[in-house]
Length: 77
Image (cartoon, rainbow, N blue to C red; front, side):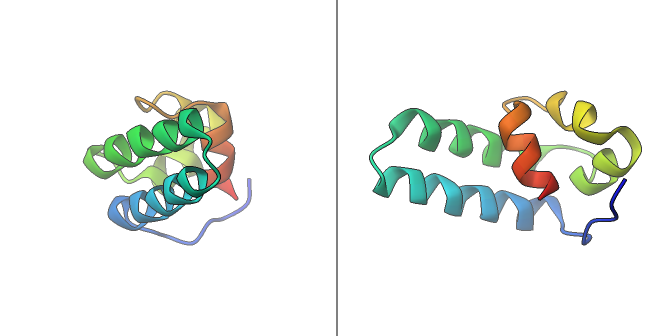
């Protein structure tokens, strides 16, 4: 498994919020809402998201509320 930069949950949430803004500009509301929800849940998640990924991979990320396989893949990237 590739070692990721060690972002905080707040930093990852900010990136997800930027993705939500991008999808809003593209007028793709369902994707914007998905990223907004994921950002909110990532920000409040009690464990560091990167640690979860390093321990459990993509499957671990998809166990976080509002984080599905595609958003989990984006977090990995």
